[in-house]
Image (cartoon, rainbow, N blue to C red):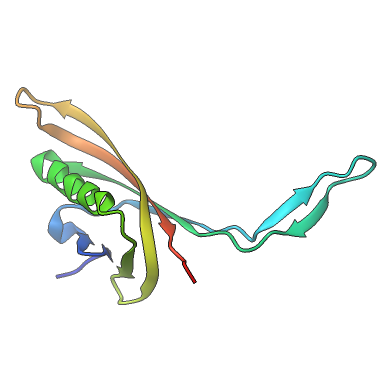
Length: 127
């Protein structure tokens, strides 16, 4: 079974009906500016910041709603989760910061025909 990424026990991929469209990876170098009254700010190194991953995608119907409930259950466990990509590379531990869904084309039984979703992960480091 092909997969894009695995977060803990949760599989992202077309085979599960829950693939992501975009992945944004944000890392900051830890630089901060110290304001100086009589001149330009000075740059100081405040330490490496944690990386943030933002996944976005669309899911369909009740299956998509179920997958988002699975992500929320992982979020509710409040535990860092290993993240492994489809080629087997281990990205380390990550925490779920937010799960956002936007349901559209909702039919009379409350099932959304289209669910646009965003998942934000933050690197977990406790060394």
